[in-house]
Length: 65
Image 1 (cartoon, rainbow, N blue to C red):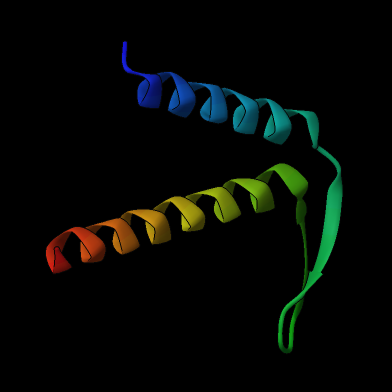
Image 2 (spheres, helix red, strand yellow):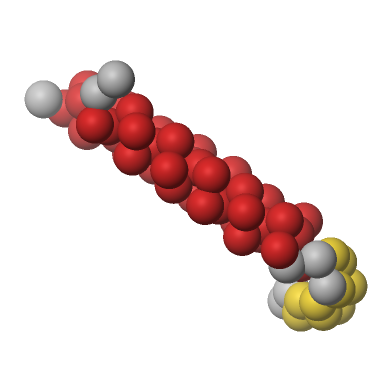
């Protein structure tokens, strides 16, 4: 196994553990509305947006080189 794969699996496992450990509800104020959601839902969406942005930036960087 490559070091990069092991690192990815470790970070993914830590992220899943962190999301599963935070189950309380939070109130999030967007520009106008206020929304109450479970914290695990907010963390999951944040993780997915971060992964998508990372993939997008990596793809643009690879296309530039």
